[in-house]
Length: 143
Image (cartoon, rainbow, N blue to C red; front, side, top):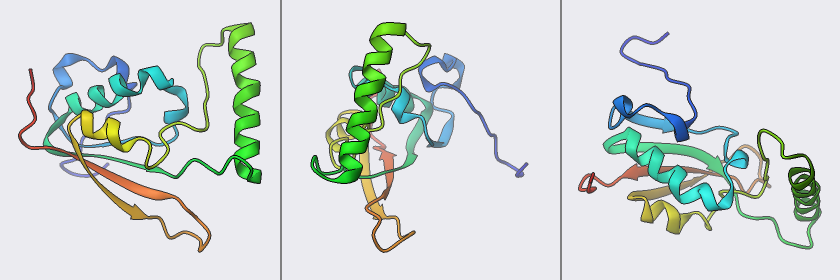
């Protein structure tokens, strides 16, 4: 516990309206793969609805790997297998490892009212991961 900090763990798509505009920071870790591409704009709008004006949405992502690279082939192959599974078994949740890639997600963040700052994540020299700090524009229309 941290004094003055309220931790809330929830599915952003089902957060009670009473929590609207209550948070200075929303962090997402490991959840983007469960948000389908058609759901992405609504997901970002839901995050924005939780933040106070000027609040921040923080997450780590990276670029989509090149098509002919080993990581790109592995991720696309895994996604193809999961897409078949999703159609055959209708699982409770989906998984897509190529969601919310940077910079592809930038226009959706902008449309949801965020100003974006990106910082390279220097864990290894070879990494292409980035920390995205998306701050809600103070003049956001809350209608």
